[in-house]
Length: 315
Image (cartoon, rainbow, N blue to C red; front, side, top):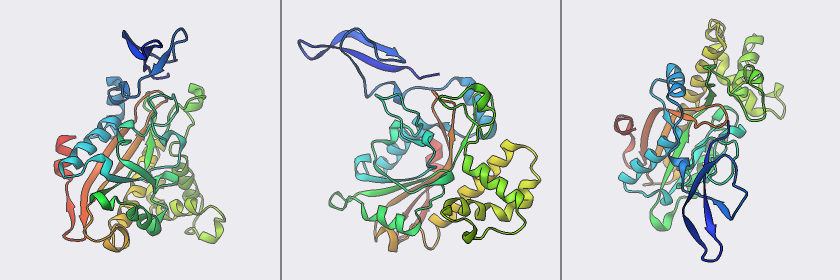
C-alpha cells in the first residue's frame, strides 16, 4: 500500500548525481549512497481512475489534493501574490492522516505537499476541521502577515471525511490496520461520535456536561438542530456526508460573518483569500481529494468578492 518515492544515487567522490540513477521505490535502496528526491513524484502522483470514480460518486466535482494545492498557488499568484508572501491558515481536523505529505519520509499525512510553498500554516482547526481557534485564532494569524513585503492571507476551511477505495463513505483503510478493521473505521471519528450523541439525547448539549471536552461539545451543538434529519437517514455514510456538510457550513458562517474574517481581526486593506470545501481522505498510500464549495477574497475596502466561478473554471 506504500506509495513509490523517487531516490537518486550520489557519487561520493564528486558529490553529484550518477547519470541515469533515478529510481522509484517504496523503501530507500540499500547498496550505495541513495538519497530521497524532494521535488519528485509527490506533485504528480495520481490515484487509479477507479478510485477517482468511487470518490466522485459522492463528490462529483472533487479534484486530487495535489492539484488543488498547485492550482490555489497559481490562482493567488495571478491575483498578485507569490506563495512565499502568503500566510496560510488551515482549518482541518486534528486527525493524524491530515498531517502534511513529506517527500522524503513515508509518513501517513495526506495534506498535499503542493501547499507547502505557502507560509505556515497557522493551525486553525481541531476536531472535524471546525475553526475551533475562533476569533483569537483569526487575530493571531492575521497579525503574522508579511508587512514588509505587502503580503496576503489565505484561509482554507475544509472539514474532512474518508472514502475507502472499495467505496465505504466515512471510512478509510489506515496504515497498521487490517482491511477488516477498515470496515469499522470512522473518518471523521469526531463527527461519528457527535452523531451518536445527538441520536441518544433528547435535550440540546450543555457545555457544563462536557468537562475538558469543549470541541466535542461544539460539534454536538452544531448537529443537534438536525437531530430529526439525521435520524431519517438510514445509511452511515450518508449521515456522515450530511453531518460533515453541516459542520462545514457552521464554520463558513462564522468565518465569513460579522465576527470572523473582518478588518478588526485581519487588518485594514489586507487581501484575504478564502476557500471552503471538504477534504476527502483516502486509504493509506493514496492521495486525498478536495471538494471546493466556494473561493472568495475579502478586503476591508470593498468587502467580500466571490471568485468561485473563476476558480472552479481552472481547477
